[in-house]
Length: 424
Image (cartoon, rainbow, N blue to C red; front, side, top):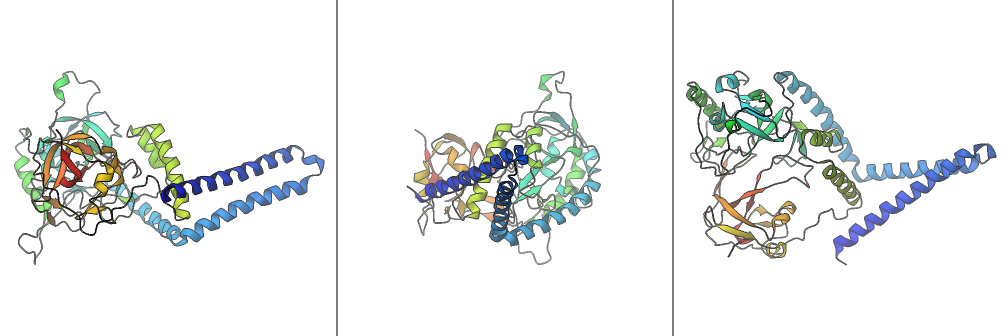
């Protein structure tokens, strides 16, 4: 039996034993409770003491395994609460409480400008120049962005408020050094207005092509040029000693931590919001809670969490040479074939193969783009990827967040050419 399967079995057996002992104690207590007048108080006390002992043992087990972690989390929650109060005071106007599938219209540039602070942001979320072209158009809500994963410092989940994603609205990077990450744009509800569920002409909705090079229609608001010029000043962070070619950019992703606050992993309200907003189904939440509980026990006993993926073994990883171009039909290699291209950290030349990518193995997709320019989320600097080993973006292949607490960001997944093969 493989080592991770043995770990799963041990935790399952341990959890079952604890459940059986707890259930037996509960049944004993209930039966003795009914016969309390039969002078069996001593047995009742023994059962109660056993139950208390079990609870105390589990408590000290948790504290011993992560006492410092618990103190750290408590401090984070306190700080997050203070920041939440501060952010709510600044952005409580025109809240729509949108759900998945709602139809909205983007307000005009002049209306949006009035909601922005001196840094061109609302609640820490910058309104970027790339978003101006969508003003006056109607779109459908893709997901509510009530939380996001921290991809800057890897600190866990972050709470966001009054923010949504609109269908197929990705950043084209035109104001940020032609960045090719294609991130989904965050939209504050104050920048939108609700449209009746069934607008009179069905053609009122605008369909945006997934091709990021596709030009979009710009409305006739004469102030757009002036507003764009003002927003462009915030997109590029100037420094006195900036070296040419090493400019630092400011976008919604680099400002993610300023636009959010810490979300405790034990805050179950996040899953209620996931279901009520339409982001997730109830059965998905129940399944994840069961997996999360299992993984919590695994971490306590330093076991292997679920799902498990083998690690690579290479010291020097290979480079693919398919010269893929947009529109090419490719097939994702099998998990085992991809593992043969990874190092022990499951990376290929710095690019991580995530467990959420396994679901796409063996499937066929069209190449959407080759990404050679990506903004580093922490520093804001432009990362230039070699032309012979680019990031490949596939049409419709996004992060589903199934094993990341249902993070709704739905970012494009990056692939290496050596993980793909041309479909016949």
